[in-house]
Length: 158
Image 1 (cartoon, rainbow, N blue to C red):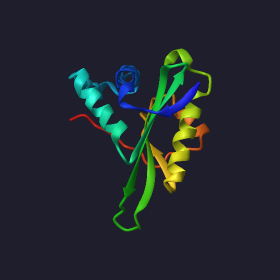
Image 2 (cartoon, rainbow, N blue to C red):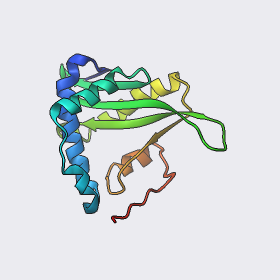
Image 3 (tube, rainbow, N blue to C red):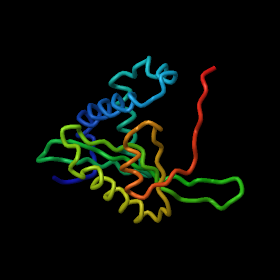
Image 4 (cartoon, helix red, strand yellow):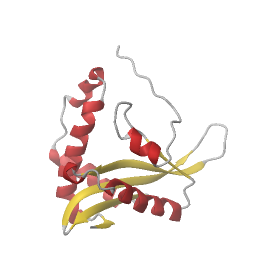
């Protein structure tokens, strides 16, 4: 297995995996929030969004290949967080991380994360943040990787 930078020719497979990823995540959303999932984006719109991420000069989109088959991906970007009081902070944002379900339990998400974090370090990021749904079981993995809860977002349906 190898991890390489995604290219335009990987787009169709990445889009299929991205849909699988987002469908999986929807199981952990509060029922009141599922209204945001009612309108499906068309395949071309998803494709356009993923292409934008692949081409982002402040981002890194990596794919995990088993032979020549893409079985996972990770995408991270760099942002400068401008706090109202404190000095700006350059940080990495782990945006997407997914491995095909058939390959779970083999440490592959850790390998993808490690490749992305090397890039963040090379770009002089001091921290990495990620956003995760409260009921997503991936919390366990993120805690194992050293992530800590920083802020809690609360939602109320009106």
